[in-house]
Length: 478
Image (cartoon, rainbow, N blue to C red):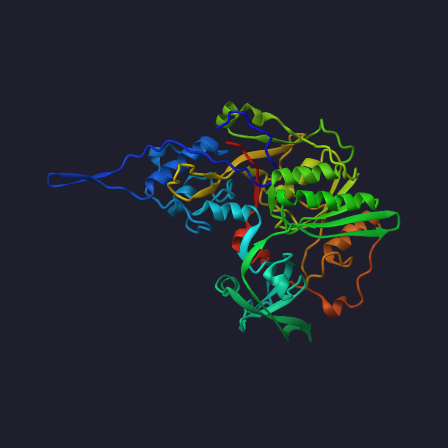
């Protein structure tokens, strides 16, 4: 393992591969004159989990001594409900409060695929809302459809209304299982008619497949008076799309964009380096001597790798827009790397938040797996290892309330309008903030769209649960 830390990528993922010596004392049993060792199938893996957390975990000083833990517990399960049953979750600091972010997967390949935006899914996100105050039947309002996904190819789009799946009415009991338990689904679409949502008679069928998220979901230039406003819907911080991201900003710059609306309402985070790239493309008076953020690690890592104390600075970007103001659209799904961009840019420019409170995650993780050849187990874990602060030492958004918007706007006008529609709820408010001119409501709004005041079960939830994690990770070399 190199002792020198190369500059690592910032926003969502820290990928590391580390091995350690396992020291496990197995219990014994005696029958007559025969003594035998009982081998617990979980002990070695749990010992490895403990040792890795002891070295890397941000709250390693909060861990109990290993001999006070139960090495015979199951190592852990993704989406665990009873955290006391599983060893990994039993070690976390005040889970699920202080640390509600660390996680583990039985297969590290699945973990890294998830972080890379790869999933097996239909490829859409929805908000699930009760149809009325009886809280029985549920409607899915499609909030996003991944470009190139089975759902998009089948014709599903943002703004669609789904009332049935495979002919079954969606309700408060089956709204998750109907998606999870069906590889192929026929979605019964609805319409707003006579004061309620009813089936329109149109259906769309799709089969789950391997989906690679393209985070550059939509971009547009909007001209209002002397304002040329770039609008970008960015759904995940993925390094593999950094060059395409630069190209979009190149188009903005060529067109003379002088305002930017960055739509992060469905963005749960991603790679830290991609977050830093966006910050460098946006910031006013780009200066490579200025600090974007500083990362705080535990005492063991700071002593072993002193270079982690080196702050991350802005990088030269030919397509930097040199903006005075950035308007960010947010929801409760805006997390992690998305929040990092907001916090990093605040010392240098006006960052205006429109929407709802963000998720509240100011910490990042790395991927740890067993590198023994052959590997003893396939576990991959994503423990929290760092906390970020901006150039002013600020990091006060790491609570369940996250960032509070400057302009609180609920994303509860259904069905959702297409990306870039200037009358769409959050974008409309952003344009009003930028231009100082109110945009009249559509005359047809009362007939076509309505505000739902009933219970929202889920907001901007992907049909693949793995895509709903809120992560910020970096790359740590061997």
